[in-house]
Image (cartoon, rainbow, N blue to C red; front, side, top):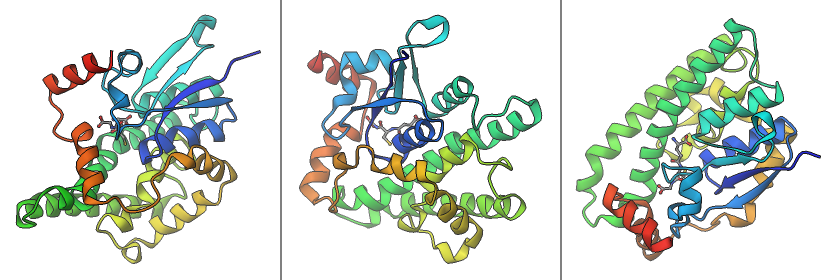
Length: 250
Ligand SMILES: N[C@@H](CCC(=O)N[C@@H](CS)C(=O)NCC(=O)O)C(=O)O
């Protein structure tokens, strides 16, 4: 009997990429919550699995050769799961190359840029007293995300899914794309993007993935004090601060 894959997870867009993939691929898994606001990403146990102190990460007890394997970085995890299941990551070289282009585009572009907008829209205003201090950074990332939404809109005018057929590239992009209206963008400007967001939302596996770990999610807007508390763990990290946090947790 194969043991479930352990998914080190917190309910954020990067975490949902992997719970969606596991549900779509029908791979048994168990959630291992990593409360990143409380600093659980710095424990030596977690950092052995994810040296970048970020979730998601997985441990597959039945990895290659039947031995356990751990994988960090959402793109690498999606490729691993796609190869393991033989689903949503085609073997044909042309089709695989299409998937990889859009997957890497997500992990190198959409994800980091949307993440920066989220910082400037959701957190920085509660951390900095003078709004003028954040305006340049906010506008830079909101504009870049707007450009990226334009790329998605053009692509989804040519094909129903990013790589033609539904794939791990859509699973990577969807959790960020579905919230761009909260990140300074207007869905009315991107109707094909909105239609693709809605079509994927309807998928039963996506619904199941959004429910998994839902109880971990903070439902109300965070107060200034809560943001300042989280900020101690999440923002302003340096090499030394990560080493210090790790040794305190160890
Ligand atoms: N490049 C990483 C990004 C993952 C990431 O940024 N995860 C965030 C949550 S969305 C995290 O774990 N943050 C913890 C921290 O900043 O210490 C991936 O694609 O897996």
